[in-house]
Amino acid sequence: DAGVIQSPRHEVTEMGQEVTLRCKPISGHNSLFWYRQTMMRGLELLIYFNNNVPIDDSGMPEDRFSAKMPNASFSTLKIQPSEPRDSAVYFCASSLGSGGDTGELFFGEGSRLTVL
Amino acid sequence: AQRVTQPEKLLSVFKGAPVELKCNYSYSGSPELFWYVQYSRQRLQLLLRHISRESIKGFTADLNKGETSFHLKKPFAQEEDSAMYYCALSGWDDKIIFGKGTRLHILP
Image 1 (cartoon, rainbow over the protein chains, first blue to last red):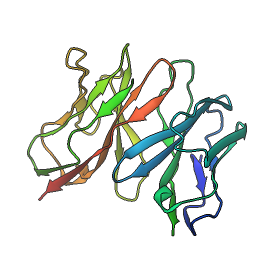
Image 2 (image 1 turned 30 degrees about the vertical axis):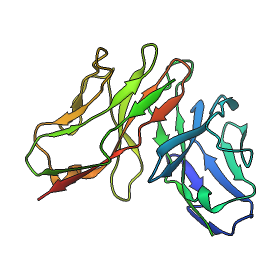
Image 3 (image 1 turned 90 degrees about the horizontal axis):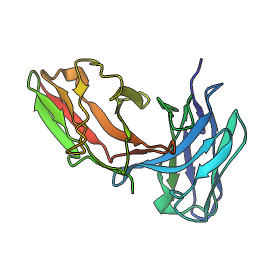
Image 4 (image 1 turned 120 degrees about the horizontal axis):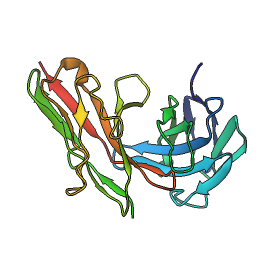
């Protein structure tokens, strides 16, 4: 099993451009999480899904951020328009459990975003 | 509100010395606590969880509900322990939040 797969691994874009980050969770996992990692704030939870349904998006910083999970094997995180302060490493993670027993999170390798 | 606090951004310890990474949490209920580790050029991965009560790579962590703490300890540090360590909390709603992390640097 290749684990959680994220793409792209690196993205450099200019301010104002749209950015789409992709994630393929581990097959059979019920929960999917998007995190943002920065030096100042550490790992921030942006949004998470249970069985493809968004449960809590209170961590999404602004309306410029949106996330979807159209099926159990794919999720996207979109930033439109992007700004330099969005520069960070974005992690996707999935877990087997749900319903109060999320269990171990399995992380992707992350997508490093640089907005110029 | 759920909160995880790791007071140290950087901790430097000599090889062979004891290690303690601090973690305090805020949660109204019975959370599940975890420690995750990120070694250089590797994925973030689970180190241990409080319900397992295991010792992984010589590390242990005890949940102290009175002090709302879940400190990570190891009696004798090894060079391969150098990494970024995150304390995490999971509540009844499956939400998993992390502290800001502590970078552990083992000095030779």
